[in-house]
Length: 347
Image 1 (cartoon, rainbow, N blue to C red):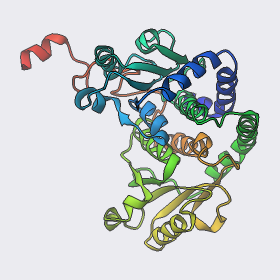
Image 2: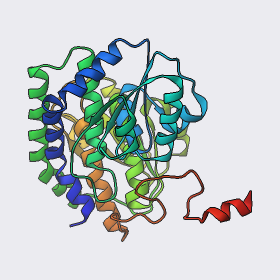
Image 3: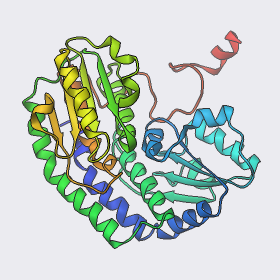
């Protein structure tokens, strides 16, 4: 078993651990963050890499874009998401935020990172870190951002938490079924062009799946909104392409199933992820458990993670190592390790 797969399979446990923390030892920080957001005139939410995907459902900008192109008013509250809190863009953004006088709420997995140490309100979610690819760090940070948003609007109650706990229990039971489906499917095709499409909160899962293909399978992929895909990009559809589509339980459901149907007519192979999807609607259909509205993102990334790990093995690729990327990106120069004097020579 790869480390990647091991990290995927322990995800429901880590998500439940996250909820228990936020309602227990982490509640003081959660309430402080809630009060700061409710009292702010300007609220920003940002992250980098998979942490940016974790925040997509709430509306966010990439940290590198905020660092270079945004200005912050003094009364702003900025929610910064980062698993390590040490990425170069996050560290430099913190300095910019300190100069502006903004209040920083940190959502992170590392108490030792610069982000947790320097934020006025750190929410540090204690989990077992992933071996390489962000799996549990991604989903627990996404869950924490969602819980914070729910707390701000007054939706965090016993019914809310019990519903999410029930969904996680059902997800644990669904994992063996999803693994069995992956063994018996023709959807996987090493080297095939792959597009991921989604709407709403599942856009985070869609973008994260693209990153899993790039980091784990070492293969290019594209991710975008399903609506945007219908305004031009569909011109490149060809037989043999692979598509992954997230279908919401309530919104634009029939429209997205129609997109899947037409892609199949054009010779593409379609993976569908959602609740109560007709089995004949795709070539590989993952049924996810029922969950609260706007919270499908909590669990609908897991089938895509399993798919990425499987395709990496079929492609004879090691998903447990990075070829070029460091575990934490702590400088802004190039892609390959380089001595400082090399950069000075090129200046």
